[in-house]
Amino acid sequence: MNDTLALTQCVVNCAAYDRHGRRRDISLEAISDVLAVDDGSFVWVGLYEPDAHLLVKLQEEFGLHDLAIEDAQSAHQRPKIEAYGNSLFLAVHTAQKVKDHVAFGETQIFVGPRFLITVRHGASLSYASVRQRMEREPEALALGPSAALHAVLDFVVDNYQPIASDFENELDALEQDVFAESYKRGTIQRLYELRKELTRMRLAAAPMQDILSQITRTPAFAIPEEVRPYFRDVHDHARRVGDTIDTLREMVAAAMNVNLSLVTVAQGEIVKKLAGWAALLAAPTLITSWYGMNFEHMPELPGQYSYAVVIGAVALVCVSLYFYLKKIDWL
Image (cartoon, rainbow, N blue to C red; front, side, top):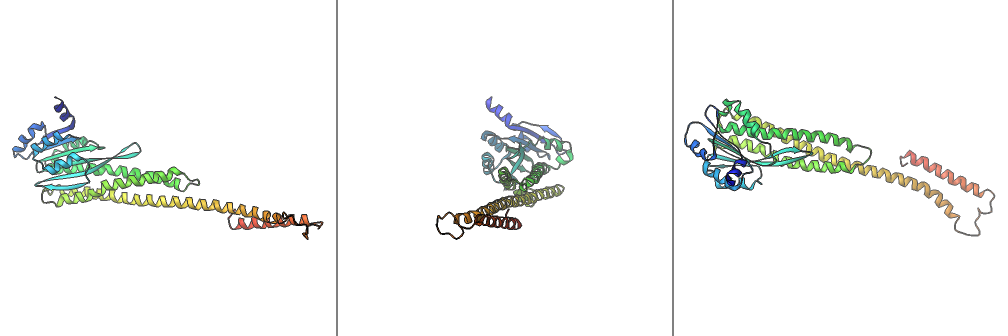
């Protein structure tokens, strides 16, 4: 009873679609029976964080390769595509915005001539909306699992774009703080975090270009000619997102360098002003210290106007030095 409940919770969807794209819900045990009849139908199964027992069950029903099942169990795969006989195994990274940060997940996909299996792990939006949209267009589902695979990959890539746009908007806001008069420690800290998230985003999005180009080239899984243009369109979207992320990473790095440079310049200005005031204080200190040597025979001491002359000389030196330092922008 508990095993059955666990299987039910992990299985989000299990349906067969006939050659006209019409849906029929089936159980896991009925999958092999559906595939045994060559009637142009295919099976679409959606899973979320399944356990090893469920994956072994699917392996028995679909005849999946041991290595592909092992990869799906680990759920810590780099994005890749592998061919096993006449089926493909894909591992792609998904992303979604959670509060102010990006959460990443994984989706493993098994696709063959008559089946599509999606296995979601971690932060990943459900593919229920993709399935519902496809079911409203049965002529697309009639093209088989390759059309459903395109819809899933298109959904993953499309979710990258709003995240990249959010990064761009955040960078625009941070640029205002970069050029602010006062230094803000939080600005450089957020720029660093933004660059780190962009790097992780690049590791998720960049391999999609290679995966999409390999899908249409691999001889193991034949893509119908009607579907190929759609994969090329997704590849174009993935490349555009990748270019955006690369550009943003360069801009963030430049913003960090500019911020640090401005802080260094501001510190230099402060040091200049302190040095200028120190010079103004040093001039009278030097002159007055001359008369603190306690010598008895100093020519200036008996003079009637010696004190006034010294005061005037100190004032003249200080005023002259002040205007000079002001002229060279040290005060």
